[in-house]
Length: 287
Image (cartoon, rainbow, N blue to C red; front, side, top):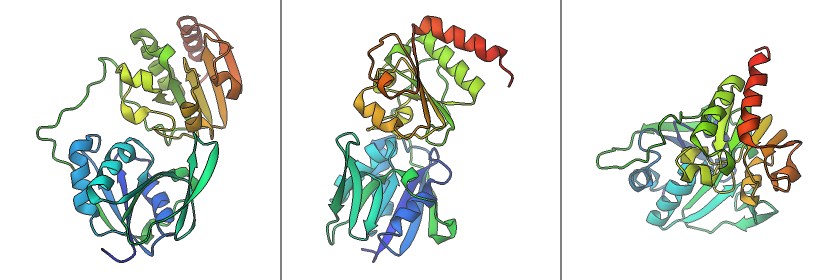
């Protein structure tokens, strides 16, 4: 094992400063940090995990953002390396302890790190300031061979969204928005606002969004200036992912939806009515 060294892993979809933020976390555990950037194939766990293992062997700790890659690929790699795995670390108070939320963020727990065991962890990167990139030693970029891989297609007409982790405005598309016509309106509104489109699990399961757009406990935590929840009921695991948003606005037909308990602005309305009205209002607003 490489003595006291960390590997920080990002993908080409990660925020630009993700590696620098991971480096800050890593340096609280070890004195040396290298970086790995995964390009093509990062979203296919079955083939990305073995490639990650090949590059991660020998490192004391491997860190990556808490995103789809971290959930699906890093966890697989941990099993293949017979390593310890921690998810969603938000603080590292000492070189032997880390803090992560439990029970959908209702409490924070401190974990004592195991000795002489490789550790893989996902990190809430926004919890750490970006280090000077110069502290990162070697940076390697890899593309995973895609031969024989199968990928999941989005429904026709559903464009890829900008990265939700770095966006100033995020539109959350929930079950209530998961129809072709409504999602087309959501993307037009996002384009007008310069927003990224996030999603809940039902929207992704229906093929209207990709897994890297998932917002919540099992996806990405976002902290935009504005989070606009459209047809989002507000399950606890989703609310955990938006708790750092500066302003939350929500539109839902259910006046008792949990999202209204945390939203700063609420509108009880049918999206088939509200979305055209919102589009019309934005069309009249100055850019």
